[in-house]
Structure formats: C-alpha cells, structure tokens
Amino acid sequence: MSESPVQFTGERFLPECGGEIWAEHWHRYLFARRLVAQKTVLDAASGEGYGSAWLARSAASVVGLDIHRPSVEAARLRYQAPNLTFEVGSITAMPFADSSFDCVVSFETLEHLEEQESMIAEIRRVLRPHGFLVISTPNRPEYTERRNFRNEFHVLELDEGEFHALLGKRFPAQRWFGQKLLFNSAIWPLQSAAPAMLDWIALEDRPPSMPAPMYYIACAAASDDCIPSLSDVTLLADPAEEMYREYEQTVTRLVALESIARRREETVLERDAQLAELAERSGRLEKLALERAAIVAERDRQLAAQSDRNERMEALLIEREAELAERYRLLEDISTRAAELERLLQDRERIIVERDAQLEATNARIASIEAVVAERDAQLAATNARIEAAEKLLIHREAIIVERDAQLATFNERQAFAEGLIAERERIIVERDATIAALVREASAQHAERERQSADFERIAQRIATLEQEREALLVEISRRAGVRWWMSLPYRRLRALSDPSVLGPGVNKA
Picture (cartoon, rainbow, N blue to C red):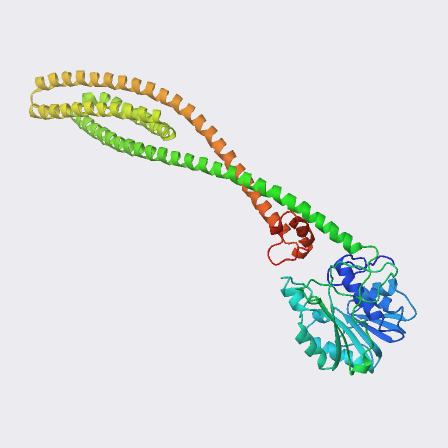
C-alpha cells in the first residue's frame, strides 16, 4: 500500500498511523467486512478511503462518499478496483436515489456535525427496505468526561440514551456493541492459531465483566430479521505486536521522564535556596541603604538650614556695606571688592554643597560636614560682631557728621578696619579652598566605590531574574510532563509496587 498524499491533522484517520488509533479504526472496518459480503455498500464519510477499499474486497460494490474533495481525489488515485468508486457530497444531502444500497457504513461521523437527525434520515432514505446500517460514535461519558479530554473536531457527542433515541426514530431494530482497547493476560492453546471461544477468568470478589465501552457500534435496521448474524466478541489480531511495542516504549519514556523530573525538582530546590539567600542578603543591603539615606537626609536638612542662615547673614552684610558706601564714597572700592569676594565665596559654597550630596552615604563625610558647619558658625559669629560694630560706628558717624575733623579721623579708623576685614576674608578663602580640595578627593574615591557596588548589585539582579525564568520554565515542563494518561503508567506503577505498595494507591489491584 502506497503512502497517502493526504496529511494527518487529527480530523481524519490515515492507515499510516499506528498504536491505539490504528487498532480502533481498523477493527471497526474488519468487523463490518464480515457483514457486507456480496452487498451494495455506501461508506458514508469515507475519509482517506482505506476502509472503503477494504470493504470492497468482499462486497459486490462500494461507494465512498465524503465532503472533503482533496481526500476523495486522493482516494480515487490510491484505491482502484472495479467495484469501488468515490464521490464528493454531504451526508445530510446525499447525491443518490432512494433505496440505492443494501448497507450503509458510517464510522466516527455522527459526532462531527450538528445535523444528526438529517444524517440518519438520509441514511434511511438511501437504504433499501431490507437494508441495514452499521454506525459508531464515541461514548461521551467515557471518551470525554471521565478522561477530561476534548476533541477539537467533535461538534456534538452522545451518551448511550441519546444515541439510542436518535437511531430509534428511523431504525426500530438495533443490536449494540461496545469497543475499547483492552490490556489482558491471555492463555490459549498453541495447537490453534485463533481460538474460537473466550473464557473470562476473574478474582473471586470481581465479576468477569467487560469495562465501559469507549465507542458504541450499532447495527440498525427496520426489523430484527434484517440484521445479519454477528459474533458475540471479536478481537483484532496484532501479530507484529506494534501496540505492545508502543506500550513498552511509553513505559520507558515514563521512567526517563520521571528521572528527569526528579533531577529537575532537585535543581529547582537548590535554585530556591540560592534565591532565598540572595533575597536575605538583598534585604540586609536595602535596610542598610535606608539607614544611610535617613542619615544623609538629616545632614541635608542641617546643611540647608545653615546655608539659609549664611545667606541671610551675607545679605545683611551686603545691605550694611551698601549703606556705608552711600555715606562714605571713599569706601566704595573696598565695598565693591568685598562684594566680589562674597560672590566668590557663594560659588565655593555651592560647589561644597554639590560635593556633599555625592558623599552623603559615609560616616567620614558626615564628620567632615559637621566640622565645616562648626567652622561656619564661628565665621558667622565673627561676622555678626563686625556688623554690630559697623552699625555702632554708623550711628556715631551720623551724630558727628558736621564735624569734618572727627569725620576724617573716623574715616581713617574705618579704612583700617576694612583692610583688616579684607585680610581676614582672604585667609578664610584660602582655608576653605584647601578644605574643598580635600573633600573633592574624598568624593572621587567614594563615588568610584559606589559605582562598583552598583555594578555588583546589577549583576546580582540579573542573576536572580535568570534563575526565576529557569525556575518558571522547569515548573511548566514538570506540569506538562505530568499530564500523561494515568493508565499508561499503570504497568510501571505495578512494577514499582513490588518494592513500594503505596505507589498504586488504595483500591488498585496489585496482582
């Protein structure tokens, strides 16, 4: 048999498929082939065409009908026989005359459409009065509900009562069969290749009964005498043991997957411990950063208050010097120079504030800032003293302004005082320049250290993010691997139960 040109999508079975789906589909057509000898047969929804070709080996003629044109065209090329044809058409409006066939076969079709009553009515129309129908459909409670499984190609599945009621409207006579893939231990005589009878053996507390069927197969007709004689039980032979080999491969894969899952779980636990350690370390660092930030904020507040006070004092000093300039024109040059020095001092103070903001996180910087604040307080006290002396001098000058000689003597005294003040300001500027240079060097060293720490923190954060992504991927993989059907892992669990009876759980036969 050549390979089918139709691609497998899950909606239509192809004979190249193996395993469970192979056994289910082939068994139904082999079951029907025994019933259609020398009859005119319609395979409704023939799909790829393999079943119609197999029925044609014993039937007088077979017509395969399917709505999918590419499948029909492929079947015409692949399966050719004098008594076999394929047609394109809908099973709810078949292109055939009334009473055209002795038998209609339709496997796994009903659940794919909503117009189920129209389909059954059309089948009844094209059947001859003595003709019969062989039809199958999934048992919804077993196929979907018990397995928590949904077939995306099924539109409307039925249970036993619904299927019986649907057929009963057109076919009062029915004989039902169940179909399911079974795992059993078999003992048979070697003298016979195919034993004719089945002898069911069960434990004393378990009745010998068949399980709930996965699929229903019904032979339906107008009356009981129109239904051909059927065997009670049929078994599909698998001499090549393809399904058993697939089962063994599945068990082997389950063992490997369980080993991988255990290793992945150990890795996840190890990564979780590492993440917990990193989280604890990160918490300690964050707590330390918050403490240092509080200290820096307090120092900023103190510096801001001191800066405001300095600005008010300097503004007051400028105001007093301006008044002196108005009264003593001869001191204008001295006052101008003092104002320039004050502007330079303000620029230096701004640079100090900027450097302080970069070094706020260290205790050494805090000590330096406190020293600078103390020095500034001393300078402000001296400035206030000089301002008070100047105010007293102004009052005295206003009282004796009419006396030229006293004014000149006072002028000389004020000039000497201003020169001393200028010398004092220059000395203060030199000391502040030295202090600023030391602070700049210290700030540079601590800024480099903070950049190194920031790079370390960034690498740690990236590592944590990478570990979290790996952990999520492992959890998704473990969850996906855990979705394998439980019954497929049952033999492996039974093997493990020999050493650990708790593996199967309560109520499971360990024999």
